[in-house]
Image 1 (spheres, helix red, strand yellow):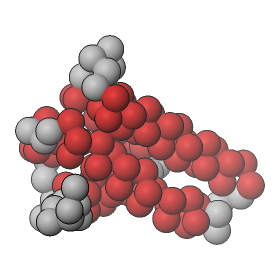
Image 2 (spheres, one colour; image 1 turned 60 degrees about the vertical axis):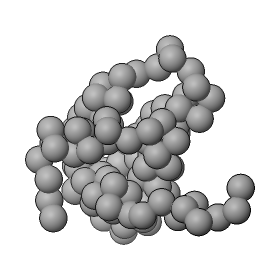
Image 3 (spheres, rainbow, N blue to C red; image 1 turned 180 degrees about the vertical axis):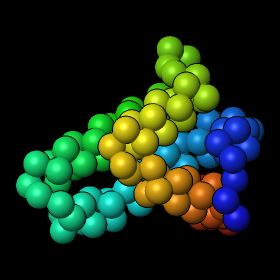
Length: 117
């Protein structure tokens, strides 16, 4: 099911910080697939530009993930980080990859549920 941007942001905002961190980690992991696809599309400059954009999206997502895990309050708001990631993906022609990654991560059950802590 494809959600609107506002619906997806609302779903993300409703999560606990640990769940948000998990989602951003999964999104970053899923974007490694985009990196593989990009390596066979376009010319060398287009490939470099898209790989740099994927790296920047992952960098921002992982930085926010660490802020959640460390309990840092000096961080982007949930909505702002989401919009930053979306804008970068949109500008670089990677929005479809990012949308799929968020949809997968937000619909995935918490894999840590049921584990002994």
